[in-house]
Length: 562
Image (tube, rainbow, N blue to C red):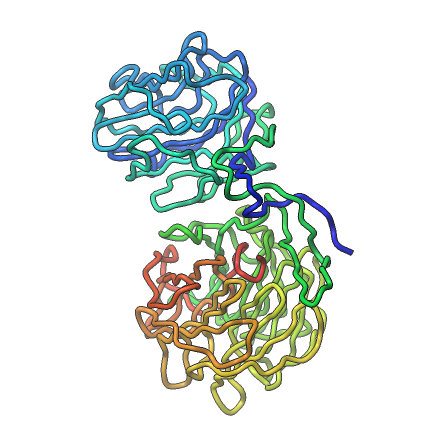
């Protein structure tokens, strides 16, 4: 039986950017340590939605540093609620937006510096007031509080709601009057911080910053279903999830997941083999739509390499593995993490036996592992129910004894590709229907026989990249249409030949991340592709620290979940 529920659905004719907000009540505020990302020495954009209470003179929306120091910057509501003021000791009141900030209504605020000109926009319109200022603003960031002349405690003067707070460094997004964004703000290039978006978690943040709530009076909520013009985009609508189907000549399965869980856009990399340190247990993450160096997440329950991972909207999971520090130490371990929350992995259960080199894939409900090695080549397929914990259950078999395949999925179909049999490196592609059980079926062939490829997928297209055979490493990227059996087609190339890449679905529905490997020495490179197009991979950033190979990967927004 399906479940009737509210979810975030695109194209319903209303654009609700206020899908999560934080309520500031008197002594509540959010604190983030000083960071180079908001040492603002050039163009910048600071924006959010705010709904203030009827009373609220001197209510601070945000401060960077101490506003009475030369590097401080603050946005606050002035005396009697008559004006929004932007203040810095470097220049006093820089900008004031008079009479345009009414109570009990959601307003979009944007403070923008372009060149040496600072403007404050309210609902997309700039006041005639502008300021000329080239100061560098820096320090701790506070939302809903003012720290005045270095006090021990902040001065927080009123109660209000804030949603979608974002700082973009290096870019003036608005240089003239504009139409207010219709959808929730995204983690775009240059985003220094993006928070106050979760309906249930005041510490949620899109770039990996640590947000500290100051008191129990601070809470996250959605106070009103206020729509932001224009009347297009995304909204909260009624959906039928889980097993509900419309049984016509064709049927569809509407999107599952909750607003809080859907499409967070985080990729996680775990474990691997690192010379000369050998096996590692580290877990790190990135935001898929951004770029840069990975951020520490936590640790696996056991250091290991030669394993794989996947995930759904909330959980990532990692299965099997091999310990190069202890020869012949193969593992039946299944670990899991909550992808939105940095912490060490927890024990989920066990595979049917110790092994290495499995391939993993997921939809929103099930995780599936296939193939592997130890003490011989294997063809077993197993599955778990991701939302629970427990041991894996037999699903069926791969058609051939195969190790080191790559895995990916649509919401209904899982695909395994490449790998090695006892006698050869393989180019075969096979598929399963995830919701059922049974043996895999032939799909087609890759353009090149190889094992240990990286994979990524949208809901319709699957991509396989890199890999190796006993003599060569490859830079080849192939793609398939997951719903249609057939041979793979050339997509483009990696920047270099790479084998032993991270295995798992480290992707969103639009972008795939391809991490690690050997070329021929260990690398820490992350590259990305736009899954819907074709072309060569581009540089994304690096895994922090030394290079790593035979790692595992997972994400919370790949195309198998849409």
